[in-house]
View (cartoon, rainbow, N blue to C red):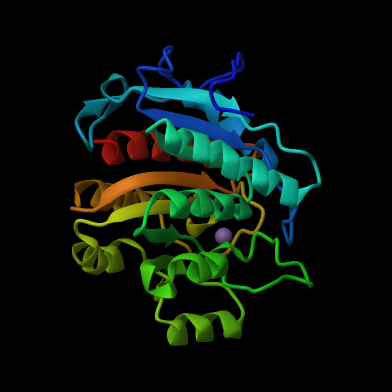
Length: 290
Ligand SMILES: [Mn+2]
């Protein structure tokens, strides 16, 4: 399926009606086929769109309104239930098409494995780019219970694809000992526990470079985001994640695309997790798309 195909469902608030004029394509990846613990992130994109209606259009952080960035919500990719390989191939082709059209892809997950085909699409388009990865989990496993297609493997795959020296993880507080060993020995950059402070050190080193940013909502403490499959105690506040988004926005890196993944609405009857996610997406749009 191509992103231009007509979509008539709920859209993110202030989605521009004209695809041609839009600079950004928002797209959902309702997939949770490979999760190691609790499923439900397939319902993330629809819920985030629904609660985005409660957002203000204005960002007092960035002094911009959503109308300042023309973005088009193209709906969800109709991924085949239970088929990770085919889902991955479909996501890669979909993002290929967005990049060919010269537009900025902003993806909503879904489980974190969805970022892997996105990385592959970007690698075909860009000779050189870095990845900023904000997450509770290292996601550096080679496989999980024998499966290499797992939501615990995308960053390991990214290291193999673009070189570990181009991968920068922040907020990491969970993973196997081997994953932390790999982070130390491979040449990738991993900041444990915190996000904003280590970003301040790294962003000047990335100045002038193309950067893709992937955010897993579970980097937040479960107190701020209980609605996720693999909640991990000891996380950052929603205020710190906003600060991180704004640090990237105000830095000299060239953001070429991004995603926000792992919102699983069913574990959060208060809906504060998707409500927070919709605000992060507003700030990503207003801060990262120049
Ligand atoms: Mn995670």
